[in-house]
Image (cartoon, rainbow, N blue to C red):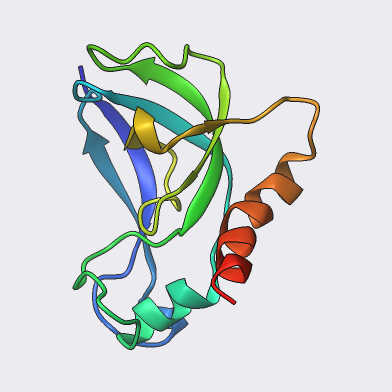
Length: 134
């Protein structure tokens, strides 16, 4: 089963005017993966540099920005039993978080207690790992 969804796309390098919102189809999650619906997603300086084409070792356009997210699990692929639909999870994605749906490997997801401020958790996903490099 596949789902229609919207996502932000950087179709070519340039300023903010190159950003597009497009509709696409997302396949069911593969084995070991889950499909999530972002609640919050970061659009960081790294995303801006990717849009400009100056981020180190970046994927070429077209690409969907969004370096990290906090999301709700929607569906599991086969052999994906770590999380269940409705669970809140966070992930450092590097790409694809600026979308209504994303398929991600369950091994890269961390559970997020619903009692936490999800906006703050979203910022923390990228910021703590950046500060760890110093």
